[in-house]
Length: 448
Image (cartoon, rainbow, N blue to C red):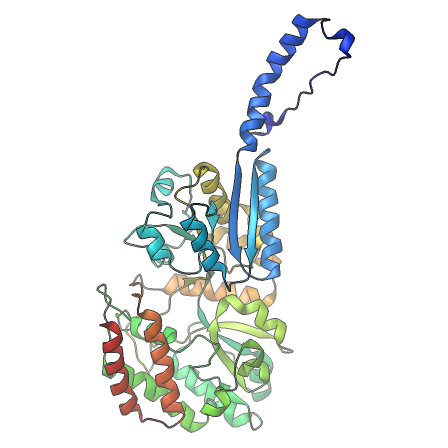
């Protein structure tokens, strides 16, 4: 609501003996006050809700964003509903079932069924009208969040698969830090050099199946995209075969046998970021999602920087014909299709994306801003680790190929199968050939 509508007129409190005095004037005064009372009553009805999960830092920053929005909409309120991830989606599903879901929200799971049932607002009309401005958003990133070619959500922060580098280990071993355009040959060479030069027990890189890291299927998808393939077809079937999987598993099995990455029993010690190889002093490089940059740096006594997942371009190992990496969303923001306040909800989502004051509050609490202008605006205000994260995200956005097919419902099961397959080879429970055969057979059963 406009600030002018917040004018307040207080009715006079006359003594009982004077109630009839100046009745005409009092009536005029009451009549003059009526439009303002109606405006305030209307404002008071704008009582929205927003729901999200995350860390305390994210909570506090989001609360400040809400306060800013309310200050620009006098009389309107936005109630905050937040907490941890565990149990979040169950509560949200119950609210949707009871037709009492928030107006604006993050969603942890099940968005496809919510879209299919008409519970989430289609945003394309608001983008077309200019109410939701995505002029500074990377189009290839937006493609990754579309459902059926349509947008029902806006990325509330960008992230991507990456490698974290321990700068002290690189310096101590005399190995140069990789550039953003490095390839798999460069990665293997750096891992071997560090393992050879570092004290016993320190390896060049964590293994790709690091339990709390990216998990192996995500970078494998980058490898496939470098060859013009997606992990799945539009019909929801596997889009790769034994040859690609054999190349991938053989590459990591070779590094493991050379001692460039840890043996299986060392990798298996990881049960969270606190025990990850890069924090425990067991590796100089660590594959994971860039969105945890601040958290990971907070656990490390050494300076960390964020780099890209290596490319197959110009590489003899895992060669590619195009750049395969892409940026995903650390999380997304949705609007309830049944909201009573579509105008205000879209306004809030637009501010998340484009408002400089929002950007200054939010910083990197949800990843890099979807708007390139907002990302550039806040870069001087963020920590060095986050600055390197911004550089990584921008590099990948500039080089990514617009090739994307969403995972089918069985995608997470295939991801788990890939993880188990890497473990079987790492622990010597199967040869690469045996593991590939098992994977193809099991994947076929899952996809049926």
